[in-house]
Image (cartoon, rainbow, N blue to C red; front, side):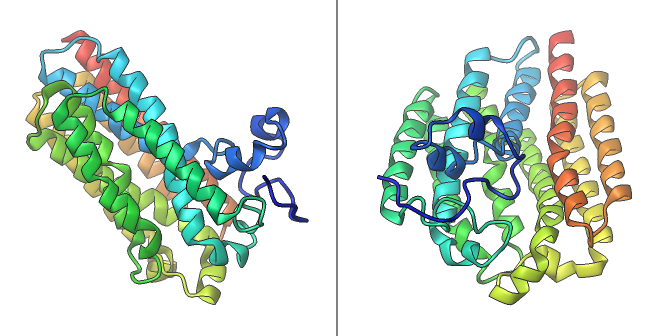
Length: 312
């Protein structure tokens, strides 16, 4: 089923000797790499806004422990749907990925998985994602389905605009709306502010990420905010992080959150300042480390929300 290829099985931006490479059977390894099981930061960044919305919604509902079943569904859904999105992205970017050192060993670009095999795999993942989505209320089901339009167009945005990071933000933070609607069956100003804050957060961390591939992107004609901002990226990152914190703060105001939620936001802001201080647009390895560190930023804010809800 897997096509023979001289390309190495290791993906350049995955830790060498990771658990997927060590334990996955050879026939399944390309598919595990295709959905980025060896690089979990992607599903973390998709999951965290879901959990933010769930915890914020619980604060608005009077406090207590956020729904554990919903949290587990969001975890499974983030891994599955991030995987489906990666398959679609790699199908669309096969030729681009093959021309970039960091991505040329990806399963589709290297020929280890054909486009036809990838399409079937994506369909199966999407079916599992649908089953997960159907566990929520009908408002959330319709809301979740609406995000597929954004997911479908994102892989092609880098061909037409320097702002594909904005479209990624629209897709990756949709869970902030879903997390809230899973509890309330509706939307209000608080989850919308949370969603907008997440978009600005994504603009910051994915601009950092995009600085790894600037030279290759110029050669193959791909656009990004990293290329748009160039050496002037730091003030743009400062603006994105600042706007993210302002919008997250508005979300807290709308639900009358307590001191612990605000402490979580303060911790997230300190982490953002640390990223700004350590950012170097010319150091690809540092950009990757800073990008991955945004899991901690998201967890800091989440911790404040959960503790505040429990205290209420």
